[in-house]
Length: 369
Ligand SMILES: Cc1ncc(COP(=O)(O)O)c(C=O)c1O
Image (cartoon, rainbow, N blue to C red; front, side):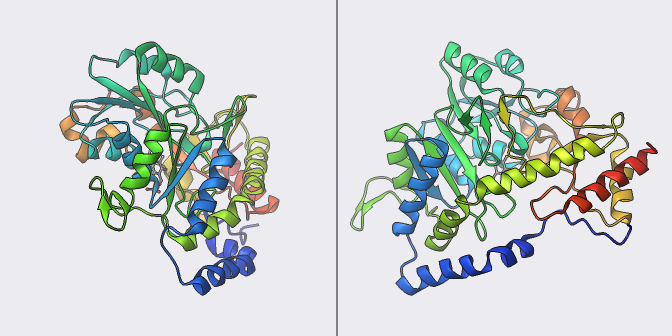
């Protein structure tokens, strides 16, 4: 079995699978000779808004910009506190800091998503918003979070970067709060050929402002109504994302099938896999386990040709950039305990059942079970 390789990602295989359609996208866009804010972009926006069930979608350069512009359009800035999670990619906190607001952390639950009861404890007179993250493609407990937000009159900006194809009680992630910010980075389930992102909202004014902001605040060529930035999803990526959106559900299903196989084959006792609740549809952008003796397991897997990754070894409050926020080790015990244990196993849609079975058996072998 040891000659089997299990790569963590395989974007080249994705290209082989979609070559004809991707090259047709390139041909369609290049032959028109227009690349910025063309009909491909508005068609993608319409399609994505319909898919998630939101009134507006605004296509942008990245998920990070979607977060920042959402906060900005909701007038969150200096003097405001935004309650968020220490378990995420750095962009979640970065977006809050960049609009001038203060990130305030609340600890997570065992499934790595923010704990609504901990959010409530962190509310002060300065709290303006909550930014939950739907980490790995599993939605945070949005009914409880929206309940806290309503009772305290808070805005909710969902970091939905890992959320395409993920539902909670039948509703798509990113559509519970005021704004949902999505990433189309190459490692996401709906991915562009490079960076990309989009914001969804039911708020006409927020959509209007972000549309202006992404293109220098220009209403038309001669009229700038505010100073903005350049954060436009390019037309080629819009065309690719339109095509890939039709395939998203099948990708999510293939990833879910692979995770279920792991669940069946990995013997319990040493590695914790958060369960999926009956009301969740986890999109499994990542498959993160919590493993005993994580670093030795990771090395053992690699010796056997299986790639795995630590997402992430440092919780957000312990980065150097967060020093001025004044947190210390021990402040968020659940998140901190998880950082020593988290290990993402390869589960992407191009893996065969044999590859998954081999990876699961190797995990069992490591623990001697
Ligand atoms: C949870 C989370 N938030 C924000 C981002 C930022 O998205 P992007 O890389 O598209 O800027 C990412 C993606 O990398 C992410 O995983």
